[in-house]
Image (tube, rainbow, N blue to C red; front, side, top):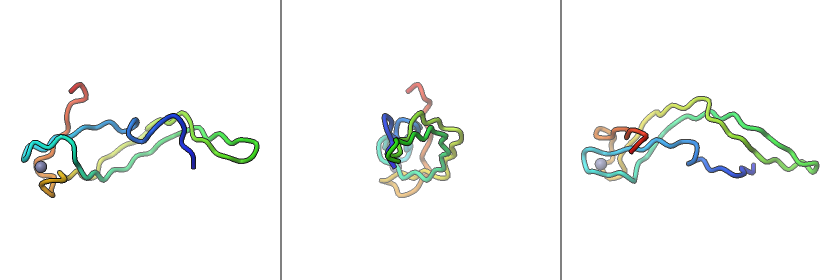
Length: 80
Ligand SMILES: [Zn+2]
């Protein structure tokens, strides 16, 4: 499958902070994301996926990579 013009990281933009160790950059995230997109096939049958839109997103768990658990992890407000 060919995704054009977007990356998964552009769609899911939550940021986290571990209050136990101060980590802002390394997390193990288990999540479910439902994406509606426009599947565009060429005459030759090659698929490109365009106009992705996240219609449902839920985070099952977030663990700090350094602490090995998620007890200190909090979600940062989007403006930060
Ligand atoms: Zn940590």
